[in-house]
Image (cartoon, one colour):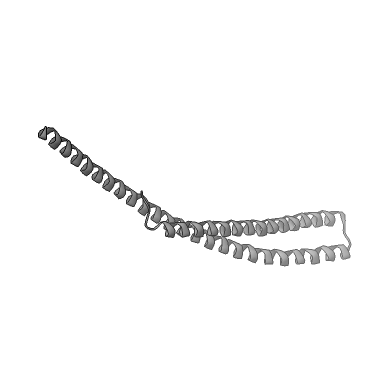
Length: 147
């Protein structure tokens, strides 16, 4: 019966890998959410500027122009804040991705060690089987000689 001597360590490594995968997926989701918000704000600003330009061609009041200008400034501050959040989320996501890659490599090392150890186990089992077969054939030969 084969048992891998590092099986508990491999199990722990695999559990850690699963946890890191979950954290990585959460960081990707967080990045996507913030990036989507940023895109929506940029689109909103673009649409507002286009609308403001259209209103200017037809003649808009000073109050209206001032209102749109302050609203655009507010959007720009929100966009600037979201850009910082996107950058932070990207850094966090990349860091978790790096940790996941490191853990994958570590788990793979233990799996390779298990494969090599199992191969050595099989070779040893074949060697022991051959010894048993040799002993049986020797016993059978001596039984035949004794008769």
